[in-house]
Length: 451
Image (cartoon, rainbow, N blue to C red; front, side, top):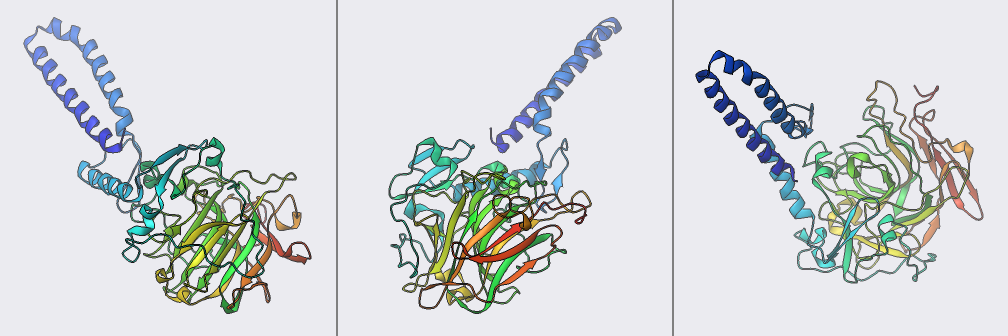
């Protein structure tokens, strides 16, 4: 039952209650005192039953337009709530496109197979009437397996797949939107800076980065974990950032990796995600396909879907490959997942600075520390263990590379390390002939040295 239906059901029950009270009040007034006394037990029981039937509706958690959560068991103002629900339903109609096939994932997600030219990206004025582009030339020095069929996502475990000519899209629900602070901010990161000590805004990092040159892409392999996130409004992620502009309001970023975000997805599964912004996370950009922007071209990858399998402590390690690069011919930024699966692209016109090139590439982990209990969060980064524990125990990135102006993959030079709070989450770099440039990173969050 939709929340709007719940509201009208509540009003109907309230009317029945009021009419019944009036009816019995009239009878009681015309009866003898003996009859009045005999009706009281029945009337009390009746009120208890009717009131109990209203409780599930009245106790629905709500979110105000200002973004503050109202306490449960508080009756909301009908007018404001109807307006909010209407905004949610309008958004869902816009973002959830008609499906030619629907797949129920074992983890509870619903995956819609949407005709590729009807995906959310083509709601953008500059893309209307167009179709996805053909694959570009990959960077030189890149070894891809074109015949790979495994997507490493949980929804494919059902044995179902999306037909050619469609793209799989995770369906957005009312519950998803209601978990956000507001409809307007759903699917967006908070306004903040990248790669800065984040004690003021709650974002903490353990990353490596290169800057000072012109970059046209980045590539790495990273292992996937299920870090514990202790607060519903925190997250833990591991990703690649492609960055350009100053660190003011003109910041452009392209981001891809895996994340655990109970607020965005309603669970604690690590999920493949993308993000972009052209104004420092203010009004442009979004996660995944939750706005017009990223154009998906693959029918085997659902952005926002859970990744499976995952790494286990002191046991099997599972990692994924990610590459973002600028197509020399058309200038769009393409994304590859795994070993050769082209996911899609960010059109160049979305950006200002990134329309030309990036001036920073960053790899690593990020968490949100809300201090909701008055002390540092216990939300984990990576595996939840410090970098010094090494392979099989700590999270890692390996084979770090960047793409130059001539579409060549190159090893990293002049690498910088940054851990905002190294007693909570740290990082250690290394290099060998098999993994090239690599690093371990992460940590448990709150501990004796991280109060």
